Amino acid sequence: MQEDTIYEELGVPRVVNAAGTKTRIGGSLIRPEAVEAMSRAAESFVRLSDLQVRAGELISEVTGAEAGYVGSGAAACMTLAAAAAIAGDDLGTMARLPETEGIPNEIVMPRTHRNGYDHAFRAAGAKIVDVGNNDNYLGTGSNSTEPWEIADAITEDTVAVGYMEKAFSMPPLEEVVEIAHDHDVPVIVDAAAEVPPRENLSAFVDAGADVVVFSGGKAIRGPQTTGILAGKREYVRSAALQHLDMHVAESVWEPPTELFDKASLAGVPRQGIGRPLKVGKEELVGLIAALEAFVEEDQDELDAEWDARLDIVEEGLDGIPGVTTRREPGGKLMVAPEVHVEIDPGAAGTDAVELVGSLRTENPRIFVGSDDLSDGAFTINPMCLTDEEAAYVTERVRTALE
Ligand SMILES: *Cc1c(COP(=O)(O)O)cnc(C)c1O
Image (cartoon, rainbow, N blue to C red):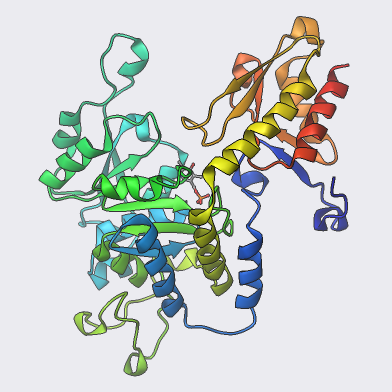
């Protein structure tokens, strides 16, 4: 296993990542093609708006959306999308955000779609109006959100419907799109972690979403600080106007017409709400390279690689007293298959919480998936491991328990 990483050199413990693509431990490993492209991007200057047009063309090609744009993460793209839905082409509103007094700013969301990342909508000045409840959990067959509740919540203050895409998201996106479009409001889809499968790049656009955001730094393996905004031209235009650096001399300002037409604007916008979400030339180029590689990737080959790595994990954990493993197929909550490891504290001598906590204090730190801790279990995700690291993780688990 690699021991001379830059993190060791800096005296910072590195992480062996068996948890999957989690931002707090570095997201994913950026593709070598993207690193090389970024290093070359650093060698000269470029007008960022020109580079955004180039990235937008690729995004449009791979998603089927009218237009595309790059922000500093999927969350950043959610802020840009909300800002676009609120301000449209109005320079005055753009300048005021996130202040929205007297300006329609409501984003309607099914309550079960609310999550920590929707703060990114509110950061633009949006107010989230959530509808429905948690009836699915009652086991009565009743739904958490009925489509009529979305329709009922849409008023003249509504600027968009927000939708968090997961394999289990209800009501179906097509139905929500139909309701929103009947009321002339767009649907913004948070699909940050929903690729692979690669087909999902276009699936939500195909379902009628007006804006879809994806993380550039998860399975696409572009720079951590990139996100993809794919959608209708009017929202991409507004997002660009509120994101690009706008300290320009109007007399010589000739923005690319693919993004917006200077003639249709009253003047140069101010630095917008999106300005703190800037994306550098290196990140833009890195995202382009990563996205090109991602759509060429052989998913079957990758699936076989992940499965083989999980075989190493299951063999490595076989026969440890108090440890039971089972394989969870990918494709639902997680894009990759995982090994679910249950710890019986009576037989193992320690419980899952203690074990997972102690693995994190080692050097290198070991992060396993902690979503199932309340069931006395942890998970091992193959996406961000090498085979060697997979064996190392199992060896450390075995040592901790023996
Ligand atoms: C990861 C994630 C985000 C944020 O993506 P970034 O690219 O890290 O900004 C937003 N929403 C959901 C559901 C996510 O899983």
